Length: 114
Length: 111
Image 1: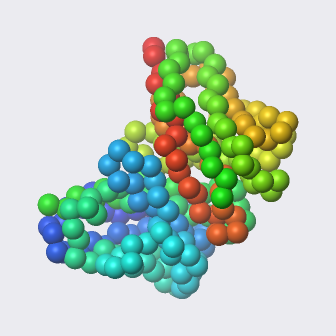
Image 2: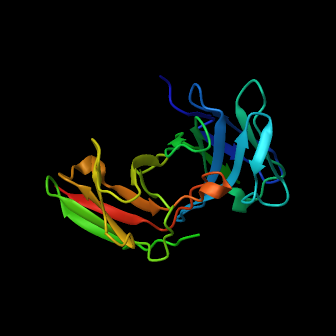
């Protein structure tokens, strides 16, 4: 029973490039959450998605960031025109439904912007 | 949303019990208390949750005060692998279960 998978595990981008982070939830899970952890800080919620729907994006920066969870395939967090301040660990979590008590986290993608 | 307060860090000796406290004085009657931990360079991991009664699972025990304004995560025999940051969280269920991570408690385990 594979856990939450994220790829790539490490991503290096130059300023101005685009970063695409992928998250495959656990089998049977239709709810996906993205969190960001800046260096030496706690995790901050970014966005909550169900298949083909964004439910809550209150934690997403207003510009350059977008997320999707298509009917088929992984959830994608996309960051356009990256800046050095985007360097962080991005974690994805999944759950089977909204009212479950436990979120399962992936290993994260560590983005470095040079 | 209810706020939690935890000590920044704690130390323990290996194979001794560890009691990690959490204050949540503004907790509401329907707020569940969740604990997650994050090992170095890994994603968070669910540990335990509870509402009113004390809870036990294979990882830990959760002791909840009678007035629910505080709780304690108990690791019965700390191992080196338990060295992590432990987060006490009251999820916002009406907002889709998003988890709000505070600073947590960094647990250091000495051999």
